[in-house]
Image (cartoon, rainbow, N blue to C red; front, side, top):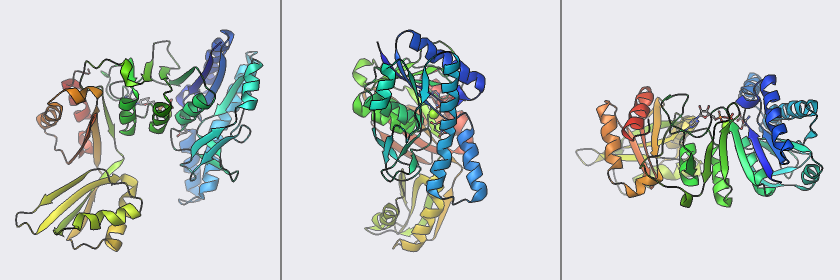
Amino acid sequence: MVKKVLKFGGTSVGTIDRIRHVANIIKKEQLQGNKVIAIVSAMAGKTNELISLSNEISNEFNKREFDVLLSTGEQVTCALLSGALIKLNIKAKSFLNWQIPILTDGEHTNARIVNINVENINEYLGNNGVAIIPGFQGISKNLDITTIGRGGSDATAVAVAKIFNADTCEIYTDVDGVYSTDPNKIPVAKKIDKISYDEMLELSSLGAKVMQSSAVQTAMMYNIPLEVKSTFTERKGTKIFSQENIDYSKSVTGVAYSKDDAKITITGVKDRPGVAANIFEPLSKGQINVDMVIQNISSDLKTTDITFTVKRNDVLKTKKILKDYSKIEYKEIIHNEKVAKVSIVGAGMVSTPGVTYKMFRALSDEGINILAISTSEIKLSVIIEESNTLKAIKKLHTVFDLD
Ligand code: ADP
Ligand code: ASP
Ligand code: MG
């Protein structure tokens, strides 16, 4: 007998027919003698709908109530799926976050799971029941309902797999695995059979939302193998596990993109020692995450332009902090939100020389200007004008033999 954690994303449970379909997948597993814990997301679009409702009340909606509101999406799915299983004569029950409980730490909208009580659910599984758990949420030590960040049902699934010591953790979604790039944007994208935690972590942090990055991080930390597969086809999915089991014949495994970043330039900065520290110190105190940094010295060597990138929703806060607190003299602060970050990721990059050149040449052949660059051992990211995103992904996908 195998203990399985099966997670079903929003599209997979987006309609009543789909919920019935998911109930049949679970029934099949149960009839094979497996113990099943299912983690469910809110029905597709539901979480966004709830956010819009809160915005109608206020753009600064109370965070505690925001989490209470958002957690309801997953709870609806739990009840519907349990009901659908019961209709199929399968013993099933929803366990809501406070009933289990799933304990979290950290602030509202961005909490993290620290523990889960296994007793009741294990007993229920032992009596041939299927446990249905809402993803994306928990309860704090003050008994407040918390959510764990967008896409967080993946993180719930991984935490449940770890704490319940499950044999498998399967992420059912609307594509049949992890692809070399988003298959809904680039149809020639190829499915990847196996990918390492490190590569998956880079891809998801850089925009491939097929897996939430903090879920991948936890899986990597505790060595929990994951499988991403389709709810709608029986095709083989993608296995995510540790690096030793993977053979790298290609330098680049995938291409990701995100439109979460913005570029800020401070022009005419009087250049003297300590200037960079004076810019970034108040930003760090203000919890602003700076990603890429570029400094151009002017020809007279007296002033410089400093460009850096931050998350798009931090732009106004960043500009305000710089104006109010930085101890530097400058001409002006300008920003550009119409940029995209395009990244190539591959563990094979470490042993392949010339990948950087190949990427820059490919973009230049398409007439695409690079506005900022950042690298790590297994990834290379550039900031470009947002309008060039698709062209860049297609070109990189082709030159790195991923089509
Ligand atoms: P779920 O609701 O099941 O959690 P998500 O919408 O969060 O599903 O993630 C699945 C989506 O991720 C796909 O529909 C696809 O458009 C997108 N995606 C982005 N990059 C990739 C990639 N490299 N491989 C597969 N899917 C990707
Ligand atoms: N429903 C939540 C969201 O849309 C969590 C999830 O789907 O994973 O972000
Ligand atoms: Mg998701």
